[in-house]
Picture: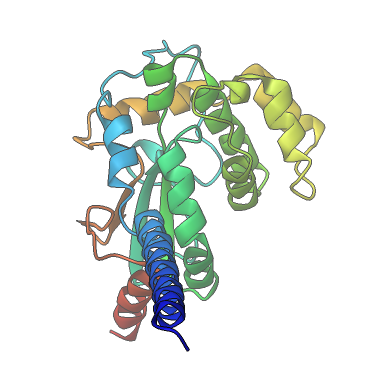
Length: 258
């Protein structure tokens, strides 16, 4: 074999080796990006919260119309908490959410299965509080209308299922689709037994609008930095960058054991 041919084959092998190394590096970068994205979705969502929190004080300031009508079973200070789970649970998770808030949807997507598991097993009670900061930040009334509809669902004993449906069907943050009564009523059809004349009347009359406004005011005056705000037995766990659904489950189970 001539020296020229040997050099040609060696050069070809070198190019092939270089190409394989490039492919390995690209695959490694791809895996890192996938893992990194997963961590952001599960743990902090801090960047999203930062956008929401930047104007946290700018609620829409809607004036309450009519008397405050408390949803059935609401508890806590001024009856502003909608409780889910057994009262005997040793751990309480306090969650402030806005149905138009994308970070709230991300939290629900990541943590909902564990929260449902723990509430269904009697180990955790969740107190849901409803906020309307996106109405103020982006304009519109969708946060308020959706919150009123969720309170109407609470009257029917269907809060948890409807709460989940609203987040699963959340429009883009700039799209005020939830402001339309027809939209939140349409979504009620996804919850067995919720779309009734009583529910529709509650939504269309804005029966709990003043209660929602009172809840929104409590959020503004509570010193919170954004939604979601998630507090486990007095500790803000959403600000804990090490928090995961598995860690939340561990903390609750340890408390349950006493």
